Image 1 (cartoon, rainbow, N blue to C red):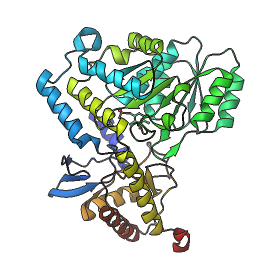
Image 2: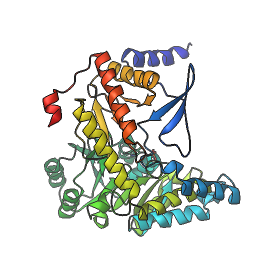
Image 3: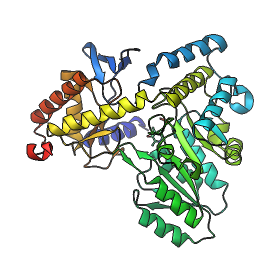
Image 4: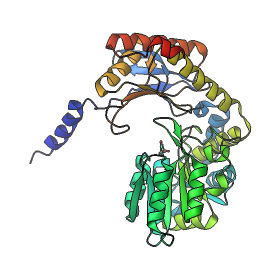
Length: 409
Ligand SMILES: *Cc1c(COP(=O)(O)O)cnc(C)c1O
C-alpha cells in the first residue's frame, strides 16, 4: 500500500485552501529586540519582528538570560526525570512559590507548557468532580477545548463572552449539578477582554467553579503583572488561574494556581503532569527572574500599552483596517487567506517586516488577518516604517482602505 499518498493528499488540501503554512527561519539577536536575522532562501537578511508573543522582550532581558546561564552553569541542563521519579528540583519549587504569590493563591503547579496545563488541568479537574458540566466559552483556545474533550463529561458552549447565554445555561443545569466555567481573560486574536467580574458574579450566584486562562495577560496587566483578574480586583474570586511562562515572561512552561487541595489533586492525578519530564532548572530560574522583575517594574507594561496605542493610532490614521481591540493586540483585517499570505510575504521580502499571517483554524474563515504585537522596544521610527510598508502592500494587492474622513475620526 502507498501510505505516502494519504499525506500528500492532506497537504494538497491545505495548498488548495491557501492555508499551507510556511515558517520563517529566524535568529533573534539578544539585546536588539525586536531585530532579528532571517535566514531566507536568498541568504541572511535583517528584519524587524512584529508578531512575537514575547510581548515585553523579557526573553532577552539581562536578568532573565543571566539567571538561565547562571543556573545551567551551576546545576546543569536537564531536570533528570518526571517530578515523581527524580525531576523535582529547587528552582522549580521556588518558581511555584513565586507563581502562587503572583496570583495570591495557596499553591501552583508547573507543566511543560501552557498547552499541557490547560489540556491536562481542565481534564483532571473536571474528572475529579462527579457529574461535572463544563461551560466553555465559544472562542476558547484549542488547549482548553482538548482539556474539555478529554474530561469526557457533559459540556456546553456559551456564545463568546455572552453573560446572558452563560446565565441561561447555568440556570438550565440546575443548582445541584456541579458546574465548571472555563474561559480566557484576554482573547489574543481579537484582543478583547472577558467580563471576569460578571463571570464571577454568575459563578457565585449559581454555584459554579471558575477556571480562567490568563496566558495573554500575565506579566502585562495588573499592578504586579498578575493579569486581568488582578487588574479587575477579582483574583481571589477565581478558583483556578492558568498562565504561561512562554509569552510575557519570555521562557517556557505553563501553570495553574489555586487552593492547595485542588493543586495537590491535579499533581496527584493529571497524566500530563505525572508522565513527563519536569522543566529544566535553568528555565525555571529564568522564569522566576522575569516574574520577579515584572512584579515591581511597571515600565515594560506602561511602555507596552503606549506603543500599542501608537501603532493603532498611526495605522488608523493611514486608513488601514485595524480591528477594534481594547488591548495590546493590533489585528489588521485582510479577510482571505491568499491575500493574507501574500501581504505577509511582501512585508518580509521587500520591507524586512515579519508578521505571520493568521488563517483558519486559528481564526474563522473570512476573518484572516495580520496580527501585530508591538513591544516596548518598537520605537516611533519602526512604527512609521510599518505604516508606510503596510500602505504600499495594501495598494499593491488592491486591498480596501477605510475612507480618510472616517480614519481621521
Ligand atoms: C499560547 C496559548 C496557550 C498555550 O501556552 P504555551 O505555553 O504556548 O503552550 C494556552 N492558551 C492560550 C489562550 C494561548 O494563546
